[in-house]
Length: 243
Image (cartoon, rainbow, N blue to C red):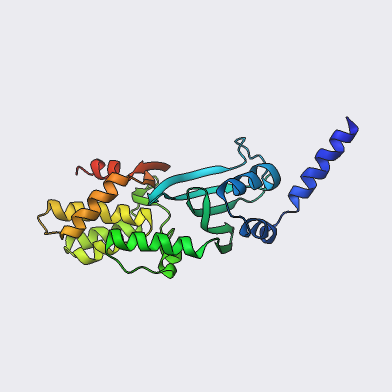
């Protein structure tokens, strides 16, 4: 019994010593999503207040068998959360942003896979995105919301979309639609559908992209009034706005 207690104490002490740089070092050389989950759940993760080693925020398809996830974990009791925004191709790790408080790092697992997804995206959206755009855009907007919290204060993105709709600036709404970020696409989708209702002519490609986004129906991280963190499909958001 004493030996068991000593081992548990030593294990907790070891976990407590895992800082940001060590977590980054342990993650950056991994190749598979399975290995990353195993690392957190079996080696460096500490069970949080809710009984989780990994706390998922959103898991969604982004096209061509690529997925985007956000999740968090701690490495010690009452520790500050590590947050991960990750892109994978089925089980293959592609890219992630690791952050903890003010610290953050971009971790590139596979440049070839980034290029593969970028080429797929450009074909679907008729864009000329680069790997640099991928890294900049993939998680550039954290949340979709018309208004969040008790005050219902609109996000800056919603204010822009409303302004572009009022002025019928299709190209500005299209910039949101053509982003590699799902939440941005949600703003662009709602904006395009509203312009269409107003009788503003949309291009054939715009209509193709709208159809594609509604079919893939990626989960969008939202704040709908006081409900922060509800994940709603792109198609359901479009239907919510009466389209």
